[in-house]
Image 1 (cartoon, one colour):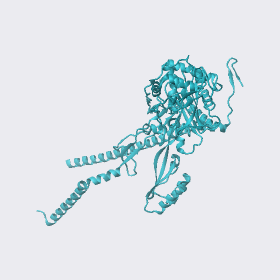
Image 2 (image 1 turned 180 degrees about the horizontal axis):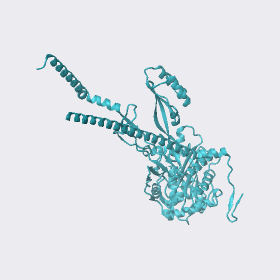
Image 3 (image 1 turned 30 degrees about the vertical axis):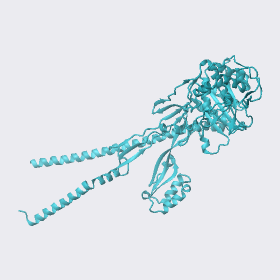
Image 4 (image 1 turned 135 degrees about the vertical axis):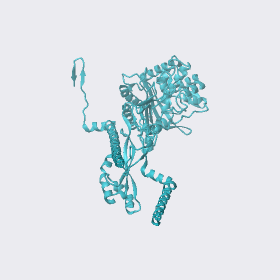
Length: 90
Length: 540
């Protein structure tokens, strides 16, 4: 009788240990994957940030503005506001 | 009692156990250090983390130097799933001219079966890298500088390796490389949950300059147009804030610029020149401060040329101006009058002020390549006389601007600088101003301002002056020194001044080297100065 109880306890302990190991190792893998994905996303965001900074710098550069102005044939605004008459003078 | 068979079995078991123990001893004790190192190398990897190089901004917060990420492609033959020729073709379809640019390297790599690995020097962008989804390829990341303004303020910014702020502040801009020593799985991916060792990369500081982008743009166009208009060899313009010494703009233009090095050369700080008549107000302020003269001084000997030893001092236009006042001396740019004022000042006082004005040393501006002006040991009478009108002394343009700015700043010497502050992840580290030196009493500079204002409004450059702008300035035309004398074939035309005269917004110097349309500063450098002053006055 006592042998049977001892054997049951041993088998149960073994099963608990195996299931705990499975759970624990899968948790480690999940966490590692999550960290890896987050790190990759952070890298992508860093690259996107840098690209946007460069794009903004290029689009606001004087050289670019000059090129755009000459290409679009903008007409300078010559209207004036007459504050006394409260009207726009051409 | 054991049987014979049991004895053999037990002996065999003991022997096997003994062998296993011996082998374990060999692997775990004898070979332990070697195996441990191998295991570490297989499961751990050392990675360096390059820091981000700091950006450079103008004072109006526009970036002028940023980073672009590039990659270099490497191929590892054993990991290729397609044949090498096809892989090269695929790369070429995404990276134009890849095959053409690396023709010899590719041919050698294909034919040499022993060579497993190669890295190509071609730079590819992030976008191209994302498209290259090919097994067996590896990429090395590196940053390259990107200058969005394409040449604006080039001589100030420099490049990674040559001159300007990039070199001067390289230590602060480059940051510190970090590293990680971490375990990796079978695919080479880092196991982030395991213990890692290392240090974070420290990003380079962002550098905020005092340069105003709009003013810099105007100045660069003005000097380029000026050099072309007056058929000159080259020219320079520098503008500073009188109270702080902060540089607002600095530009050089060389008509015959062809080499890359000359594009980065900053002649404002590296080239020495004889200032000529723009030096006269400095000498006159020294004399005011020393109380050697005052506003009532009359030059009674100015009616004739002045002989000194075997030399004779004359005026630039050979005209004589008897009984000139101090206003007339500056307005007419009278060499004879200045030589008599120098007599009253005396050599010792002149040298004392000359030193205090920083004209015997570098200004200490935060740019690489500043030249130190020379100073004579011997001062015969003729040399002292010619120094009164800026000949026989040599300074850089930045020296001259710093010294003249003392008049604008009520007698206080400030130090020119370009750094405004560093931004270290939100922590601002401001430029620490150097000790300001009081050179002149305000009474002396007030007198000088009134003289300069009179000269501007009544002199030959009055026609250029915008009606709504109060200006204190002086023109100069210096002969170019050659060995043993001066050449008649070229001059350095210049104009220096500040505006408005009271509480000035800026001090500016314009120099034009060897203008061929007219040699005079009053008809070449002055119009450029006034055109710019009119625009800048509305911007600042």
